[in-house]
Length: 388
Ligand code: PLP
Image (cartoon, rainbow, N blue to C red; front, side, top):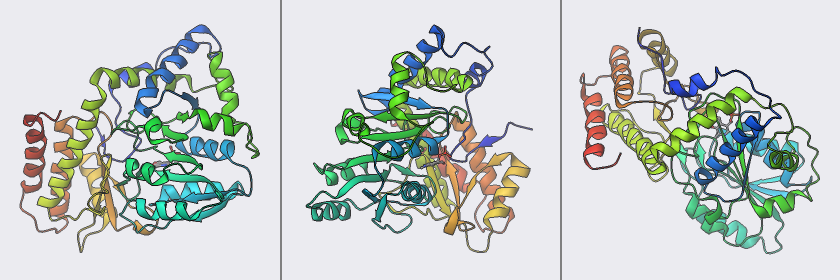
């Protein structure tokens, strides 16, 4: 049987060199070797975040990094403007509520991105600057939506609120310019576009945010970011770090820069375009709206008469291909196919072949080979056009 291919939007298929790094013998996490490792990770992550400010790590998944952002930046009772575009944006709002923040929402229909004009209008009305925080999602994994972060940054303009960005499933796959966009805390995690096993959150913090964190009155211990920064200066983390994940992340960052950011962006864009071509040719409708399509995960409506769970089970059991399902109100309504991870063109084509044969077997009336041919033409056409 061929290897199982993960097309879920994280954890993703990891390169053998990344996995092999995890088998290295343990080192002293308070010794010079770990200090070098931590330094390489922080330095290597900065251009990926688009920042010259500090990047600290936490031994946690992405959610820990998001909780850290809330717990460190704010004080109970402060108002934050939450702009959810799906499950993960709502989860960040829930964290903020649990920390006693006064959460106001900018609502967005599922499948769309946050409307920059709505955000600009709400901030313009905040003449007393009561809004202390703005919470944005770069890439909403549950709906396959990617926000236009440059437009949202422009909408925020010079409003003084601290801007927290969840880029757990976005960072690395397309250009991100934290400093130019004026964001304060940006969070990502190891198991997404960087294609490392889960276990580490990477948190970039602006100079202004470090200053503000000195006044934050929320309780925090494990996720005290100022403590993380103090220890980072010593080449350490405050608590025992996931050393094996750090080994793997170090290798993944080196591979990322060797491939080159432009090439990594083009790869995700190319794979995402291939999924769209496959969907169009297979009479499967993409769920996200034009202008809001994610490059890391494409959400597709389940064709009429078919069942998401049956499609996914057949793909897994008969083809060793794993696709994501819908979450919350989209459960059973969509399937999601990711582009992140160590996936070759042949891997993508294997996924399309399997997807098409399961759709046909379960009664979706499409011609054999049509979807895969469209995806192949897109993959090859993009290469001929020089988009590598
Ligand atoms: N935010 C987004 C956009 C995500 O996609 C995820 C996970 O898929 C999370 C937050 C939560 O991250 P984790 O599962 O690593 O805690």
